[in-house]
Image (cartoon, rainbow, N blue to C red; front, side, top):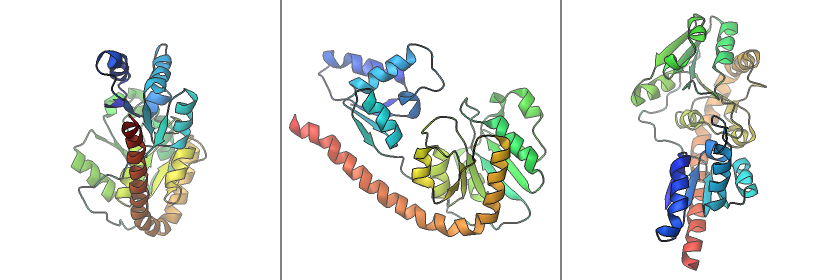
Length: 270
């Protein structure tokens, strides 16, 4: 049985029911929150998370750093990052003009340094236009009301409009405070050949080092400095993005084939 965790509650039920329902094998696709809880850290969440990692026959994670945590908990880890999504529109190159269009992929979750990104927008001022996706009602009213003039909140937009916004932007910015987290915006930006600003954790650097820039920290000043640097390197990054997409897909296909073989071995042995 293949399960996705979160939901930790459903994953726990599937594992608890196994002795009574045929002792099926459990392959768990574990997102970051399932391996190292960040949003919900109160007991018994961390304990249940470790128990699920230990009891699943296989846990699939996106990077080696998370795999080490799974192994330390007594589980068996296999690694497969997300594949590149198929964008509904074709990539397009946006000429660099007087204003750098920055798309900020946001849901206003606890791991997103939104206040610091707003500080960066305030520091950069004219010449940089920020479009924040997601429902801005989740943002504290004080931050929303104090947003600088070069920031707009798009609200929650349909998927096609989301892709159009990314295609029309010069750069995609997606930051997270979660350790070893690979954000979805990075895969989407690579699919549309967009330069990106990402959190420089080891997992992200390993996959996107050639096509992304990484702030020295999540402070507003460091985010602003990185966007200034990206502006100077914009034209040089575009051909790297065109070349990296097919290479990423090739590597992913190889990793996916290895994962399928690894999952088949215990079944043949049984």
